[in-house]
Length: 121
Ligand code: TYC
Image 1 (cartoon, rainbow, N blue to C red):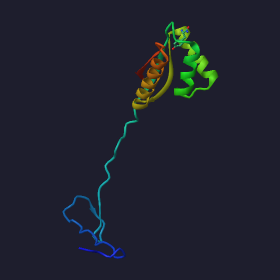
Image 2: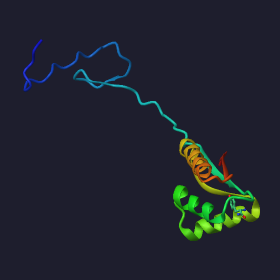
Image 3: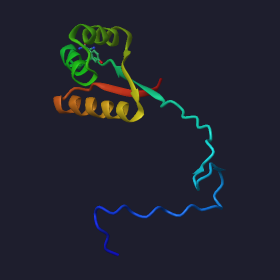
Image 4: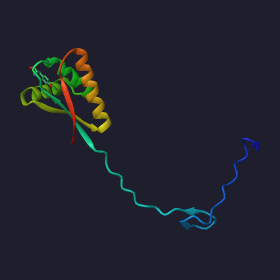
Protein backbone atom coordinates (compact mmCIF):
# COMPACT_ATOMS: atom_id res chain seq x y z
CA UNK A 1 0.00 0.00 0.00
CA UNK A 2 1.33 3.48 -0.85
CA UNK A 3 0.86 5.99 1.99
CA UNK A 4 1.22 9.76 1.88
CA UNK A 5 4.12 11.04 4.00
CA UNK A 6 1.74 13.28 5.97
CA UNK A 7 -0.75 10.59 6.97
CA UNK A 8 0.11 8.90 10.30
CA UNK A 9 0.45 5.11 10.38
CA UNK A 10 -2.51 3.24 11.85
CA UNK A 11 -2.39 2.41 15.59
CA UNK A 12 -1.30 -1.17 16.26
CA UNK A 13 -4.09 -3.32 17.69
CA UNK A 14 -3.99 -3.89 21.47
CA UNK A 15 -3.70 -7.56 22.35
CA UNK A 16 -6.11 -8.18 25.24
CA UNK A 17 -4.36 -11.47 26.06
CA UNK A 18 -1.02 -9.82 27.09
CA UNK A 19 0.00 -10.07 30.78
CA UNK A 20 0.09 -6.75 32.61
CA UNK A 21 -2.17 -4.13 34.10
CA UNK A 22 -4.97 -2.75 31.97
CA UNK A 23 -4.90 1.02 32.52
CA UNK A 24 -8.15 1.54 30.61
CA UNK A 25 -8.50 3.19 27.21
CA UNK A 26 -6.94 0.07 25.69
CA UNK A 27 -3.41 0.73 27.08
CA UNK A 28 -1.42 -2.07 28.72
CA UNK A 29 1.49 -1.45 31.15
CA UNK A 30 3.89 -4.34 31.63
CA UNK A 31 4.82 -5.03 35.27
CA UNK A 32 8.36 -3.81 36.10
CA UNK A 33 10.83 -6.56 37.10
CA UNK A 34 13.68 -5.39 39.33
CA UNK A 35 16.92 -5.75 37.39
CA UNK A 36 20.33 -5.88 39.05
CA UNK A 37 23.27 -5.05 36.79
CA UNK A 38 26.67 -6.14 38.09
CA UNK A 39 29.40 -3.49 37.83
CA UNK A 40 32.06 -4.48 35.26
CA UNK A 41 35.02 -6.39 36.66
CA UNK A 42 38.24 -4.40 36.71
CA UNK A 43 41.70 -5.50 35.69
CA UNK A 44 45.14 -4.14 36.58
CA UNK A 45 47.82 -3.80 33.96
CA UNK A 46 51.01 -4.81 35.78
CA UNK A 47 54.42 -4.02 34.31
CA UNK A 48 57.42 -6.22 35.10
CA UNK A 49 61.07 -5.37 35.58
CA UNK A 50 63.86 -6.68 33.37
CA UNK A 51 67.56 -5.91 33.14
CA UNK A 52 67.61 -4.59 29.57
CA UNK A 53 64.75 -2.20 28.78
CA UNK A 54 66.02 1.39 29.15
CA UNK A 55 64.38 3.40 31.94
CA UNK A 56 63.60 6.21 29.49
CA UNK A 57 61.61 3.83 27.28
CA UNK A 58 59.50 2.62 30.24
CA UNK A 59 58.77 6.23 31.23
CA UNK A 60 57.69 7.02 27.66
CA UNK A 61 55.41 3.96 27.56
CA UNK A 62 53.80 4.91 30.87
CA UNK A 63 53.10 8.41 29.51
CA UNK A 64 51.93 7.30 26.07
CA UNK A 65 49.70 4.33 26.89
CA UNK A 66 48.69 4.98 30.49
CA UNK A 67 48.49 8.80 30.29
CA UNK A 68 50.69 9.43 33.33
CA UNK A 69 52.59 12.70 33.57
CA UNK A 70 56.40 12.57 33.48
CA UNK A 71 56.83 12.68 37.28
CA UNK A 72 54.26 9.92 37.97
CA UNK A 73 55.62 7.79 35.12
CA UNK A 74 59.14 8.12 36.56
CA UNK A 75 57.93 7.09 40.03
CA UNK A 76 56.12 4.04 38.64
CA UNK A 77 59.16 3.07 36.55
CA UNK A 78 61.41 3.30 39.64
CA UNK A 79 58.94 1.22 41.68
CA UNK A 80 59.08 -1.50 38.99
CA UNK A 81 62.89 -1.24 38.88
CA UNK A 82 63.23 -1.64 42.66
CA UNK A 83 60.29 -3.93 43.51
CA UNK A 84 60.04 -6.03 40.33
CA UNK A 85 56.54 -4.91 39.34
CA UNK A 86 53.94 -2.15 39.63
CA UNK A 87 50.40 -1.39 38.55
CA UNK A 88 50.26 0.98 35.57
CA UNK A 89 46.48 1.40 35.50
CA UNK A 90 43.10 -0.25 36.19
CA UNK A 91 40.57 -0.77 33.39
CA UNK A 92 37.73 -2.91 32.10
CA UNK A 93 38.92 -6.24 30.67
CA UNK A 94 38.91 -5.21 26.99
CA UNK A 95 40.77 -1.97 27.58
CA UNK A 96 43.34 -3.62 29.88
CA UNK A 97 43.96 -6.38 27.30
CA UNK A 98 44.37 -3.79 24.54
CA UNK A 99 46.90 -1.82 26.64
CA UNK A 100 48.93 -5.00 27.23
CA UNK A 101 48.97 -5.72 23.48
CA UNK A 102 49.92 -2.16 22.55
CA UNK A 103 52.77 -2.03 25.09
CA UNK A 104 54.13 -5.39 24.01
CA UNK A 105 53.96 -4.41 20.33
CA UNK A 106 55.79 -1.12 21.06
CA UNK A 107 58.47 -2.96 23.08
CA UNK A 108 58.94 -5.53 20.31
CA UNK A 109 59.23 -2.80 17.65
CA UNK A 110 61.89 -1.08 19.75
CA UNK A 111 63.72 -4.36 20.42
CA UNK A 112 63.18 -4.36 24.22
CA UNK A 113 62.04 -7.32 26.34
CA UNK A 114 59.58 -5.22 28.39
CA UNK A 115 56.66 -7.32 29.64
CA UNK A 116 53.32 -6.46 31.16
CA UNK A 117 50.39 -8.60 32.22
CA UNK A 118 46.74 -8.31 33.15
CA UNK A 119 45.44 -9.27 36.60
CA UNK A 120 41.94 -9.22 38.10
CA UNK A 121 41.77 -6.20 40.44
N1 TYC B 1 65.57 -2.38 35.16
C1 TYC B 1 65.67 -1.60 33.93
C2 TYC B 1 67.05 -1.00 33.82
O1 TYC B 1 67.79 -0.96 34.78
C3 TYC B 1 64.63 -0.51 33.87
C4 TYC B 1 63.23 -1.04 33.82
C5 TYC B 1 62.26 -0.46 34.61
C6 TYC B 1 62.88 -2.08 32.97
C7 TYC B 1 60.95 -0.92 34.56
C8 TYC B 1 61.58 -2.54 32.90
O2 TYC B 1 59.30 -2.37 33.62
C9 TYC B 1 60.63 -1.96 33.70
N2 TYC B 1 67.37 -0.48 32.64
